Image 1 (cartoon, rainbow, N blue to C red):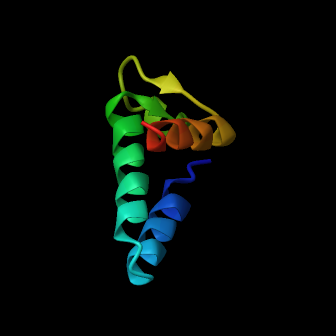
Image 2 (cartoon, helix red, strand yellow):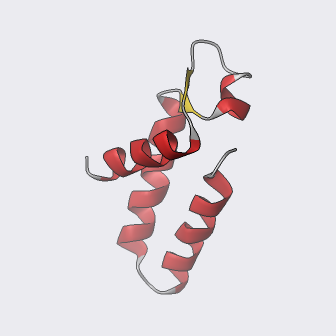
Length: 68
């Protein structure tokens, strides 16, 4: 399972509410996860040397990157 669609929906909601800074943190963290190859199964099977994470591990990694 890939939670990215839900995360992107939340990012859109934050922008709609005018919380652009929070939305940027979400999108930047998601981009950082993917570029650093921390992904769920569906992406990991298409990427060489990717680190496969569970749905909850992926969410935790995004939170970690939001704190950076």
